[in-house]
View 1 (spheres, one colour):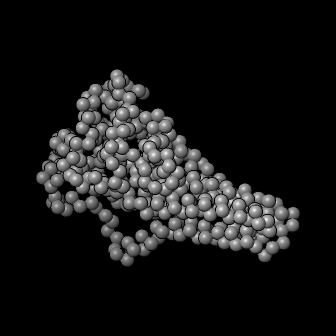
View 2 (cartoon, rainbow, N blue to C red):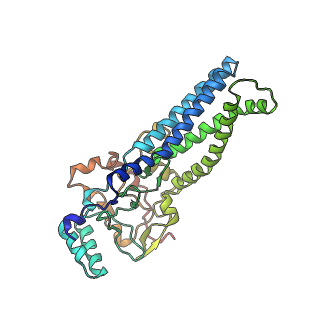
Amino acid sequence: MSATAAITPKFSMMTTPCRICFKAAKWLPVLFIVTVVVWSYYAYVIQLNLLTITSIIEKCFYLIVYHVLLGLFLWAYWQTIFTDIGVVPKQFRLPPTELDRYESAETDEVRRDVLERFIQKHSLPVYNRTMTGDIRYCDKCVQVKPDRCHHCSVCGVCVLKLDHHCPWVNNCVAFSNYKFFILFLGYALLYCLFIGATTLQYFIKFWKNQLDVDGKFHILFVFFVSIMFAISLVSLFGYHVFLVVKNRSTLESFRAPIFRLNHTWMQDKDGFSLGAFNNFIEVFGDDEKLWFLPMASSLGDGVTYPQRCVDEDTDDLLGARQRWAEDDEENEMICTGYTNNHTHALEEVVVQANHTNPV
């Protein structure tokens, strides 16, 4: 295999019509959610508030709160869907000469040596490894994986801090949009709970045959649908709140990242945890005004992350976490454009006084 051919990420061999159909099909879950929201708007605003409720005060209160929650929910949903998942910086991609050496290596030991020399030469901030201590490398994207980065088989690329690929947003949930995804779940849950709570009395009237309006079945169904979605969302939202507090991704919760602790490579689910509050700040940012708004405020660059505990062998590398990007001004725009000062602010809370094994 030539270097030119190998350096290009490998994609599916589907024909163009099949690829178009596949891409269109991936939007069906999003279309379903949008359809449910549009119908719920008709059922709640038109049938319930405008045609059923007679109290002006009750009607105005319901409509104001409803539209605020709907706006925040749709805003967060939009951001989750259309925020670019970003790309792995080009410094992590093997150049043609080193790729040739890697591809032509006859043993795993030689390949391992090629990658080790590559990350040392470019001062790449790579601290997570495989169980055998090897550098995490993606054969499909022909590049070294930054910490917390994983390859998404659906998108066909390596994604920074990949949590999972969500069909309901037709996008990866990752570093650049994880805050938006959390807010999307939270506001969707509040939206469903509010609809369920405010339509409960009219569901009871329907049950007692005291609701005699043309749109009573819309009101009945919007109550059931809102409760059904709320039950599904409460567990999912609660789980991701737990992940934020622990500073884990879904992938890391099932397969813990591997750190060098006490001169041994071992798994540690809490290796990136800096304490509940600092973990929250890493995702939601240090500006309280933006915490609950679907606006970019997460700290870091998606490539480097402060660690709970650092081995003595790698302690001297922490001061140079950002050196790998200094030679290329384009890295200032990587991912969502977050500044590297955010990463330095987080590094101040890293516990590394005695470099002991926390496990």
